[in-house]
Amino acid sequence: MAASDLFAPLEPPPPLPERLRPQSLDEVAGQEHLTGPDGALTRMLAAASLGSMIFWGPPGSGKTTVARLIGKQADAEFVQVSAIHSGVAELKKIFDAARGRRSTGRATLLFVDEIHRFNRAQQDSFLPVMEDGSITLIGATTENPSFELNAALLSRARVLVFKPLDAAAIEKLIARAESVVEKALPLDEAARATLVQMADGDGRAALTLAEEVWRAARAGEIFDPAGLVAVVQRRAPIYDKAQEGHYNLISALHKSVRGSDPDAALYYLARMLDAGEDPLFLARRVVRMASEDIGLADPQALVVANAAKDAYDFLGSPEGELAIAQAVVYVATAPKSNALYTAFSAARATAQAKGSLPPPKTILNAPTKLMRQEGYGADYLYDHDQPEAFSGQNYWPDALGRQQFYMPVERGFEREIRKRLDYWEKLRKERGG
Image (tube, rainbow, N blue to C red; front, side, top):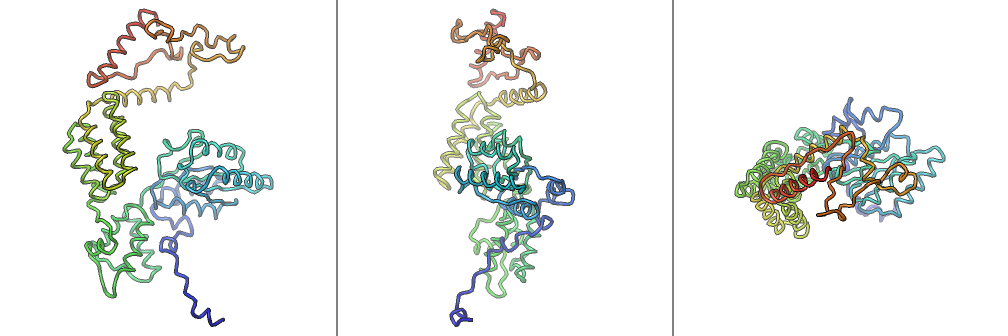
């Protein structure tokens, strides 16, 4: 050994979350509904072939870890990319390589982290290689796939939901960390419970916090909750998001808005923000309130709620929190109607039950001679050419008949919509529609 090697700096050990990364599915904490003996993933892996999957869950719930473990088990080439750093050119190279492997009988398992970051066109590019079997896709996302991923992509993949880690799973991780580090975490019982709450269901965050505590502790020092907050420089949780606080307070905020009490709504908003709740989570809930509880009684409610979300994105905390408060007061004081929510629920139920019925040929385009011969577009009345720009013709499947889902209330702007609908119904009857 060269003398210089004796004085070479030692390579620091990897971070604790990496050192404790599970080496098998049965070591994965908190996802027993997926990785347990009867879990959905366990059953899928026991089958002859593996289908494409979307992993949906919060940060630190084990999505990347599970994908890598599947890659180790699967008889396939495992390729991992991040949608944050990858573009069309890289995807094309991956797809071309996968097709080449397929021609030699070798499968490709492609893991795409943050798959929701790909735009619609990029998501569509996966479809051909999924259909021809060149790749089996595992996509990971923290966002609701129903909103962020193409329907065509979702129809070709099974969505598996990863849960936030509960207190027992976080405790299990901490115990494993203590075993690896070979010393107890220098926290008293209350501080240990506080650390579990600080992690907020995120296993990686729990281990990072534990590592910070070990670094900060002097010999023989034991931290209480106040000491823990001081050394990790994070706000102590005011409520346990896995229990009373998170779910009860967001429910109280929503119901205060629905009940048109802006003061109570601001109180619950302030409590959640002060507890360290993600402001964007709250902003998204206000957007939902604008559609669910106000709808078209005040169409501006959705505009204001979306603007608040964008303002917070632009300003961040704490300045952007005021925009969310503004939106909360607006939706709390707006006229209320659940007519849109009720109508959409009824329409979806009918579509699911009667979704195979064809629209009337009258309102379908006829781009070919054959379609014209079959009556497509025949006798269609262009509404703009009719008196008052209203034809009153039938738009419903013949086998279903006209339905009514949307029934606006006599409040706010919906009063005006009600007048329009009543007038159009009068014209429809006069014109035999």
